[in-house]
Length: 367
Image (tube, rainbow, N blue to C red; front, side, top):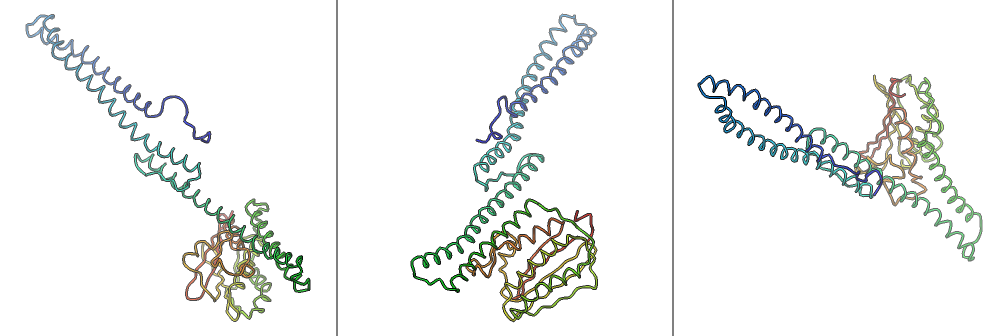
């Protein structure tokens, strides 16, 4: 058992709550008994003497009537306070015990553990927060497992191809001609691209280079990104269109912004069929600037839209790896945009897919 989850020595909270309830009842009963016995006894004696009885007779009647009833009432009050203290303690402690057990399950790797939300408002709030934490840990564990599995697959494919080529060359099954070396180089380059993508992702996780936002005109950044990507569009005969306002003043890191646009445009080139079209647009409002890149071609299933920005996630698992890239570009887009307080999203319907990102226009929101 992890050290943080070991039960500590001493009495638990249930015992302490019960003791406090008994102590509070005892103090109240003691004050009441003192008032009845002292003040009430003297008053009773004066009234009886005024009625013609002796002091001894008055004290005897007081002891037989009031004192006896008081003792019975004190006994009942003690029993009731103990019972109520135990009930209250159990009601408070049970959810805490459930949370402790769920925490031990999560520590052991069971990220599906949840606790029921019941009890006082403070306990239900704590339970709800615990469940949110557990859900986040479960999601992170799923992402980690997917990351490892997908990264292993990405590495396995080119390594298997390299192994096959080299074995064929060793056994004399294949001639070492120019096409063979080109195939070997292609597989090696895929491994290099994967390594570089992992480096980019790790650099973003470490925040190795903090963002350096400057005032800029987003129109010029968009135009430069399109010109850099234009040869790839022309090679696949993809029609390229764009529309945006005359100026789009923004505050952002030019390098990060260029990387975001390059990754989105590269994604559009990769998944737009020859003869298709891509449209880049931008619009602004009081809160943000939104840039959209829409392409024709096969859409993205609704179940996959929420996960396209995950690391190594692929909509089509069987698609040629050389076409699909490393599956990291969109994750880097999300990372860079959200680091500046922006948002990303994807929509797909009727043979058209739109990826978009937004940047806040208020500098204080992107700090």
